[in-house]
Image 1 (cartoon, rainbow, N blue to C red):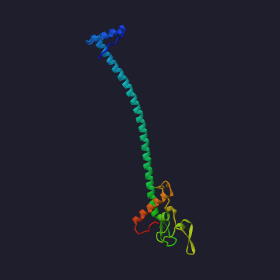
Image 2 (cartoon, rainbow, N blue to C red):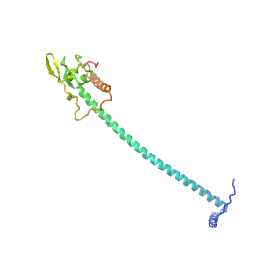
Image 3 (cartoon, one colour):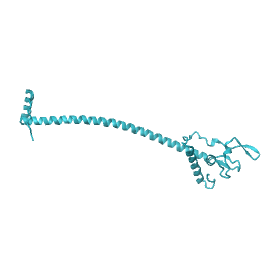
Image 4 (cartoon, rainbow, N blue to C red):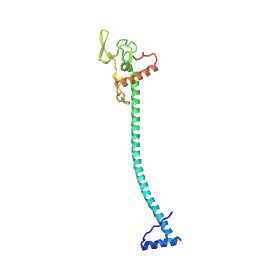
Length: 195
């Protein structure tokens, strides 16, 4: 459906329209309609282009923000891996040290290892409490004897460090219990179960 639109055109514009119409073998009305359609399409494309440019700028800033968050996440992951490696090395070092002989039992004089002292607190051979090993000396028969306890066996070497302190005393005891249980499984019958 078409409608009539009355419009006054300045003479120079009317002459340019007439030239355009004759160059394309169109009537003035057809040339005017063609030019209006082209102008409206160009105007819409310009608005569309501006919108696309805004969207592109927004997407670019979102991309930069996402890359920043990704970098932070990668750094956090790397730090977590390093902490896990350090903790694993520390627990391996602690496990090795808890297997070492620290002292002799005050009652039966058999060797006592780090896990016996730190986890069960009892001699694995005679079940005597080992708390007396934590004092400077203890009585054996009628004379006082120095303990042979060497805390140096439990101190970390220069190649390893202690793990971060356990969050609770219970979690530290559980870790030590697991280390000693592992050791007992490797050497069956060598020690009694932890009480």
